[in-house]
Image 1 (cartoon, rainbow, N blue to C red):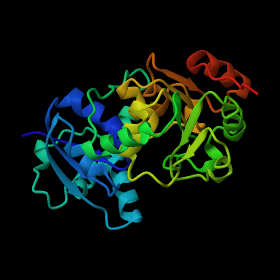
Image 2 (tube, rainbow, N blue to C red; image 1 turned 180 degrees about the vertical axis):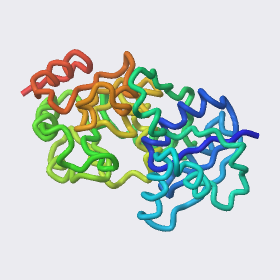
Image 3 (cartoon, rainbow, N blue to C red; image 1 turned 120 degrees about the horizontal axis):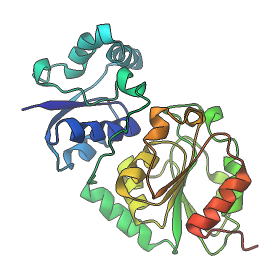
Length: 281
C-alpha cells in the first residue's frame, strides 16, 4: 500500500489532502503532529484507508523536521523523523505535504480536496448548536496565529465586526482561540464561542450549517473552499502576494478573498452583495 503524509496544523493538513487525492487517490496516511481532534478528522475521511500517527517531542524538534522537509538535501532525514516507529517503508511514501518546490511553483493550479467528511460527534454538536441560533447566522473568525502573528492580520477587523453587528436582522457566531470576543457579549445578535468549541471539527461543522462564514486566511477558509461554504476572507500579510500558495489555494465561486491592504468600504459593499448584510441602525 502507498502512503501519504500530513504534517502540522489544520490548514496545512487540509491543503495536504488535496495533494493526497491528486497523487494517491486512496491509501494510508502518516500524520506528524499533535493537533487536538486531528486523528478523528483523518480517520473519518473515506479516501484514507489507514492512519498512523507520530508526534514531535517538542516545538524545536517539529521546527527542525519542517526545515529538513523543506530542504531538498535533508528531505530523506526529515521523512524518517515523520515516519518514526510506524514501520512504514520510506519507499512506499508519496510526499503529499506541501513542499518547498510546490510552494514556489507559481504557475501551479493547486488541487482542492473533495468530499471532506467530519466526525459524527462534531456534526451532532453543530446540529444542536444551530437549533439555538436565529437565522440567518454567520460564523466569524478574524484571527488565527498559526501562520502569522496578530499584527499580520487585516488591520480593520474590529471596525468590520462593529459594522457587521449593526445589522440586527443577522446573527453572528464568533469562534477561534487566538482573540478575545468579550466586548461582543453585550450584543443580542452575537453568540460568543471563542475558546469554547471542542475542536476545529466542531467549527467546521457549524460553518457547514451556517448561512456564511467571515474569516481570515486560515484552516476555516481552506475548509470552506473545499466544502463549498460561502465565505468572505480578509487576508493576512501572506496574501499580499497573489502567487503565494496560501493565496492561490483560497479560490472558488463561493469565496471572496480580500488582500491585507483592502480598505473597509470595499469589504462592506462586498458583504452587502454576498450576504445582504448592511447596518439597520
